[in-house]
Image (cartoon, rainbow over all chains, first blue to last red; front, top):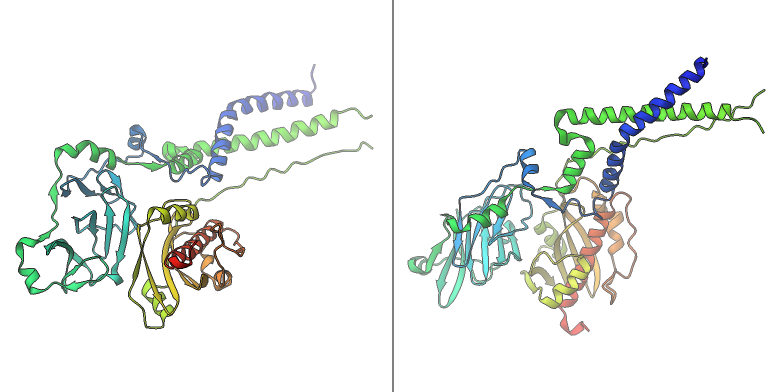
Length: 264
Length: 177
């Protein structure tokens, strides 16, 4: 009959192997995801957006597709709280969404598209390339209330409406108060106005405004277990407990085997 | 007596706490920086158009396309001041650079938005840029000592310093190759 020690040893070895096999998949996943998170910059995890429908649904993110925006002859500008989109190109707007800049106007200005929030004026090319960002100190006055274009003498001037009056500029840098003569040229002064976005833009808007998350967030949530809701971290706690049991049983088995090793 | 040889392995479990706390610190407004540089006699802004050739070189420096096609700068008495935004890890750092005679005269961090690495604003770090020039390979001619835990912010500062020197060089076409 086997001794008690021998039976305990058998029991520990047996369960060490079982727990090891059970936890192996988790450990592999945690190791791989941990390494990935350690090298998030090299792997561009933060800059890789994921838009998969079921995943966004799982996170409770619903598309917020704007129905109104600014329509130009050859394109459009539409905005949500999270994104600004010009002709299907997502614009890189600094301080969005932290400061939730709400556009007050967007208008075509020659080759450029001017977009204004209350304290910023952005100039872009039609392909979404940023030309300039002019902030409050460089503007004649803030908050900007409206954005317009003055067509005069074969030159288009950009016009800002502020509480202190209207100001016009040929380059977006030097601003002059709009003269009475220019103000009276009703036909030449056009203010940007919000319009209903046409149906033909539906697919482009749907694609541009679909919610997305950085891959880093998803890997991090999987790694911590938060991906699986409130019970996820408990699952990961259980896996951590398994790792502790494996460590202790492994050390115990090692010590036992060393003791048994015959002397030379 | 039986010798016991027990080797104890230590398992270190490292818990990585990921903080999403984001601190936006504006240390200096752009207009304050310019007033500091030009002593209350701030010149009108000038414009450097980032042409395809300039953009190509700027991309070599930044590792990405330049943020905008029209770069404003302020120039007077042989020195030029540049304000850039460059992402350190995730958020842009806004910094001002003053260049004179192809050398960096002054650097200031205006706004820092990352949660870690704000040490790049300290004089002990930024004074390293004084007198630094741009080599022909578009790298700085002096090594800038990094800061532990702020590597990405230091790299962003280095890129902006190189860009300021390169853009300044582009405003003096007669001096360029």
